Length: 197
Image 1 (cartoon, rainbow, N blue to C red):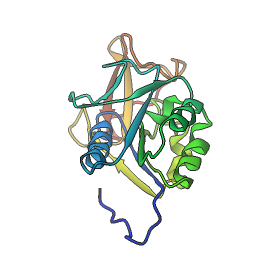
Image 2: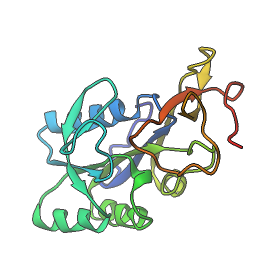
Image 3: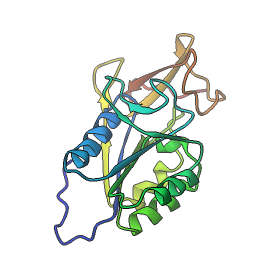
Image 4: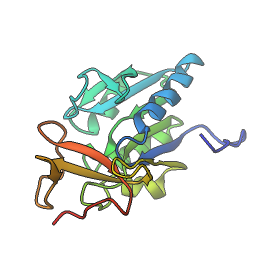
């Protein structure tokens, strides 16, 4: 985390961790949440129900670190769970691009109540277009960290996600979201990224 929070700041803000695939977003997300847990803060973590890649009840990074989470179908469930759990200090929301469009308004409501919100998500889809929710959080969040990866093709700095289907870059008419299946993703730099046709 490269920023320093002003000690006079009122509690309640949004932190966004974004970037391409394999940039370490989930590891940074979990690291921040665990810091608050170590400080005996009450932390609740949420993940989209459709993301079952590594676990149903945990947020898990590609490297295997994890943190328990509520698996939710829609953003309203966050408010329902928070209403049942009083005195929450921090919430984490994983893979925000996979949630409905109400999530940004809900996260603003939560932050306005004095709760720290930490979230992560892909900034761009495999077509290199802005991903929903992350695009809005770029200007709503108080703190934004954009992480990059290493290009799978040349080893340079990568900030794009290439979807590979049957060994070749995905066509642009492929479904926008493909969490599991035969699809594979690679981090690519601007020079090695192939625009889907």
